[in-house]
Amino acid sequence: MGFVLVGGLFNSPSLGAGISDVQRVISPGGIEAWLVEDHSVPLIAVDFSFYGGSSQDEPGKEGLSSFVADLLNEGAGDMPALLFQERLDDILMHLSFTSGLDWIRGTAKIWKPTLSKAEELLSSALMEPRFDKDAIDRVRASRINTLRENINKPSFIAYNLLREAQYREHVYGRGLLGTTSSLTSISAEEIKNYHRRIFAKDRLKISVAGSIDAKSLGPLLDRVFGELPQESDISPIANVSAITDFVVAKEADIPQATILMSLPWLAMDDPDFFASQILEWVFGRGMSSRLFREVREKRGLVYHVSASHQDEVHSQTVIATASTSNSKISHALLTMKEQFAMIAERGVTEDELEIAKTHLRAEPFLYMDTLDGLTNRLMSFQLSNVEIDYVKKWIDMINKVSLKDVARVASRLFSKNPGIVIVGKGTEEYKKN
Image 1 (cartoon, rainbow, N blue to C red):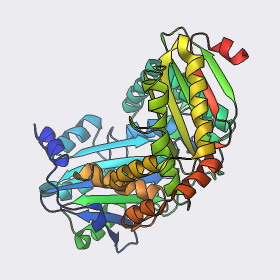
Image 2 (cartoon, rainbow, N blue to C red):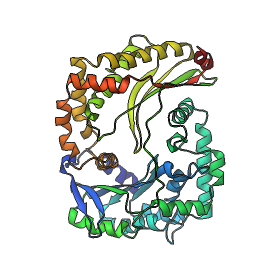
Image 3 (cartoon, rainbow, N blue to C red):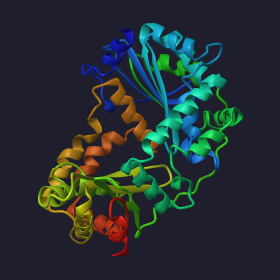
């Protein structure tokens, strides 16, 4: 019952602070965190990320990072999995871990009256994960089951094919979940070694929001994270631009086909990023976007269509995705390609520019009326390697984008032929044509 209460409060809309109130906190031991104070409720949210993720999985051990992330809640110190979960419940604390391409990320939701016990549990999970055999066996079975559940889903197939085609031999070309073979082969020692390599202070990012001040947060950071190794053992990864101008077709006997179309995109620290945000909104976001109006609304060719950018550490892309009936694949593809070409040649209209600016001026502040929303947004900025005052500049930078800027960036980004992946029935015939 208490856990539900805490979850509800963490999503409470009553929080008074905003992301414009961000403080940089440096602990006595030199650990940095971004903090938004809000004392309206006795809760603290902590979001932290270690550089690593699936890009650091060894060849043949794909899925290792996600395996490790799942195990970090399965016992620590002298507490086996069940006892560890009971201790979390006793103090109304939620703790979870996930893994992506470049980061292993953790989130902690803490009831302030139990803060001292919460920091002990969090520190133990990070410093002393048990990696017991029964937990490893249980998580392995769960991850293999998740893989089997997804392996025949058109969207899962399509995104794996897209990564393989646009990144080839680069580590980004591998599947996030691994394979049955790779998951089966992962040993306890490999799990422990991955943890030793990745969980260190040199590439650690932390965001905090809630009922704690900077003076108190500094020493807490040292108590929770201070005993981690100073340096991680990271394998270097080269930056890579996604390959374009390809078609990959996968035959599947399904009633609804999936289409993906992808191009390289811009990172948040690129001078043209704000113009690219305008383009992304006009092209593929929301019911006023070009793709929605031209492909779905006017022609009825798809059930769903949208586009959004993917901002990873070593590569950025924009991916347009659509679902359609098999009989409409060719027509939907042709219309989507026409929209790619049109925006490259003509940019956007004055009305489209103003509509996009109206939406984008508000975007950084959406979902920030909750502690979860605040820490998530703070973390997204940190992982994109922007400055702490970035959000204060956001509105001005959006307002400064001109039609000429958008036209120039549209030509820069959309002039290439996109990479295309199709999963559905009759796709091989389309590829031949």
